[in-house]
Length: 150
Image (cartoon, rainbow, N blue to C red; front, side):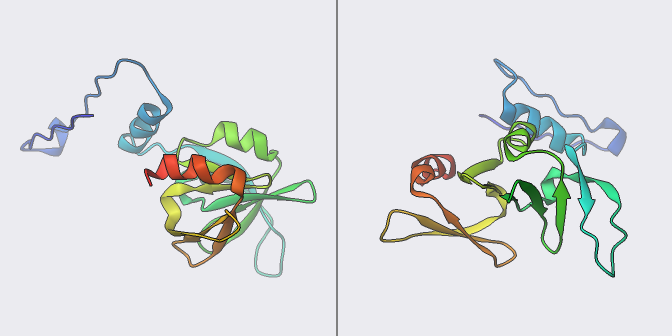
């Protein structure tokens, strides 16, 4: 895709024009980013002595990964963990193309991956920007490599 940047004299003249053959998920994501109107999902703070357990709208750009454990769905950001009433497959449909299913119980934001490393058993280990490491199951490795362009 060709990108053209033209400098203007004032912020009032700033505009973005997207010419596309069809509106794909990538085009929608670019539009969301340009409009500063990132998609959001409803999550609940997990109750402890420091949090109120309230429900908030969380921008999907802040999500590092989501995980399903014992039929409960958890959403992880850089520093916090939230609960979601959505099942993993529902989140997968809601999240943008920047998210990738890397195992039966895990969806990762590929923009939050710092590095990936292959293991002898065919799996991969993804290190996230916050230092956490996630296992990419063998059956998902090929798709991840294609998505990352590796």
